[in-house]
Image 1 (cartoon, rainbow, N blue to C red):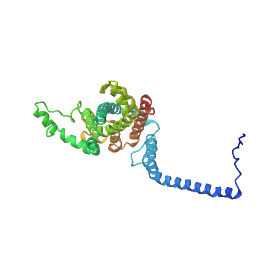
Image 2 (cartoon, one colour):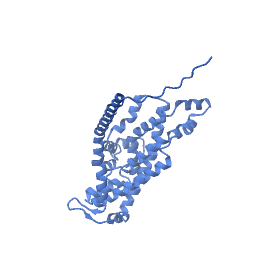
Image 3 (cartoon, rainbow, N blue to C red):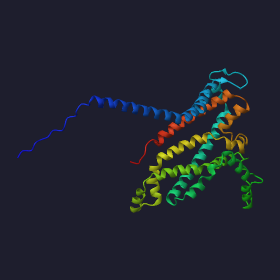
Length: 320
């Protein structure tokens, strides 16, 4: 008995009608792709326009003005590196930078630890949306309003905060009028306002960690503290790194809380770099010098961001 072998049918060449039919389909697909590209351009255009007008152009303009002497009343006069030489020799600039670094260290340290603790508690103990909303409530308030509220609360004579301290038998504390207390107080005010938002960002990162890892660790007898250091922290690292980069950049740009509470005082104890730049530009009309300090701040923030990104390996994840 023989079995007839069959070879796979060979592909027949397309007829003239079939070849002619493929061309309209290709042209129709090309028109669809072109239409999608135009629609995408329409949606991107507002954001691109805003980027060009409100970010790229002011940045380039500021870099140019940093090499000029400009006071708004006369045309900009090119002075080369004079503004940068003046900045390096300006003791108030370095003092403002030191004050800013002190503020950033307190703000980032307290905010990161507090936000991480809140996020872990939200993830491990409760999933209540109401509680998450309450945690986020201070962030819905502007920095100016938050600063004014705490200015009244911490007033040395009439503030309810000092009234409570006096009622407990302690001396009143001039939180915003004392050189020692001023910067830590401003830092904690901003921690109070931003910690909820930072906690929710970390909470979102915690949600991406598989729950079966915690279940397996519990079966092995691991404690909550051990699971935090062996599971939570390593797997949360990329999100925590991005949050740290964002908060560091935002902290170096602190201005409004200082402006409404201490105005740089007492005795320049809260004269952060952004407030000093503002005073040089809009107080003394030295826009060229203010632009030079702004460019220096841009360079510092860029260097810190790149360093943070590499040290924390923000682009890599241990999940996999």
